[in-house]
Amino acid sequence: MFDWVTDPAIWASLVTLSVMEIILGIDNILFIAVIVAKLPAEQAKRARQLGLGMALIFRVLMLFSLFWLIGLTAPVFTVFGEPFSWRDIVLVAGGAFLLYKATVEIHRDVEGNHAEEKSPKKVYASFGAVVAQIAVIDLIFSVDSILTAIGMAEVIGVMIAAVVIAIAVMYLASGPVAAFIVRHPTTRMLALAFLMMIGIALVADGLGFHIPRGYLYAAMAFSALVEFLNVLARRNRRGQRA
Image (cartoon, rainbow, N blue to C red; front, side, top):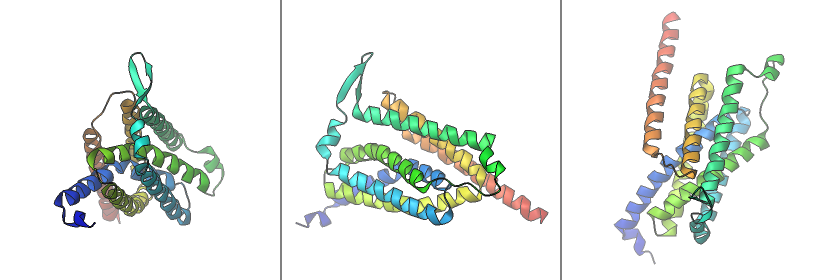
């Protein structure tokens, strides 16, 4: 019954799949970090907990619906000779939502929120609306994440363990990332730009044009490093003036 404990192949697949799930969860972390920044501090943590809790539930339920998930890749209709499955439809809809959300947030940051300008009191987003948006994105990212898990592992226990590990890492990372964005407003614009890149990649995948995620993550890592150096440079300049 517990032969898997001594099976190196099982442990190798668990480590590999956990790493893949964490990498795929970067998109989720960015969205959650940006969206919870619009909530009061006491509600932001609860929103992250609820959002990632729903992500875990969605992924586990999908793992127990393997035959349904495999059916998501079956063609539903064809447009100009290009077959579209439910997975493609979900990816296009999710990518479009990310593009819309990132564009609205960038416009608000660049043009300014006139309602906030008229009132000296900071205007916060609705807690329910934020949690609902996190749930939608969780569901969209869960489809791709679980299809990847099915392709990389054969034992459902390994898949569930990898998902739990990935969600735990996402929870630990989302708090510091969100706090960093709040402390350094310029990084919010960078995070929104990343969300636009991810949205374009999702739409492209749904339309049959796969963009290797390694290219996106390499560009994001380089941009994040440059922004981190800018933050350090600004801090050093403030220290010299003081």
